[in-house]
Image (cartoon, rainbow, N blue to C red; front, top):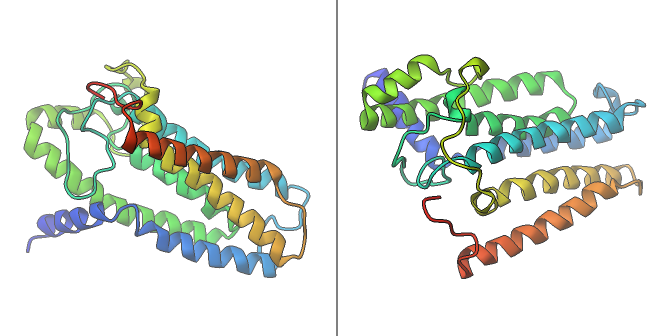
Length: 250
């Protein structure tokens, strides 16, 4: 099998499990975080006066990634930029808004969302390994997606891809979004990410305190974890039992 077909086949497989496989990296990061708590001298920030600021910075990085996803999803029409897992779906080609400056904004957002917890480990070589894994992993998914879009939209796709970079935004290309922002679509599609971010940081904080036999919990994380989990449950119910979050064409 030619390399091009191999990469596409790998990308299609990884696309189906793109929400699950990164959990392996999260597990490794969690183990490294536990090691850091037991051996704080191995970390660049543990035990320093800047520890709380560093942890807040890590949370900000993850929330920044979520913001990118929210902005992207909020301005897209139905059957594009979705969470489908079985097959590629694209009724139309997104070329305005954030898609006018970067071709894969959702994966850019994912990178920052995962990079926050990775930073929390405080280990330089783990961060390098994480970036390398993310590059290899998502490069194949992006390749498979682009093959699909190229086959479906032809020259329209090629002209767009010619001027818009794949992963590093080119801001001078920005074109106003073609669709108004939809909070309904965001609440329907991105509830998972918000709850996951605060659950991960809350878990790391609690585990760290338990290991050190302390009680200095970050009550902001406690409150936000409870709030976002409740929000997730409510939105999940509304999504499957009502039409409150439904919106024509979105």
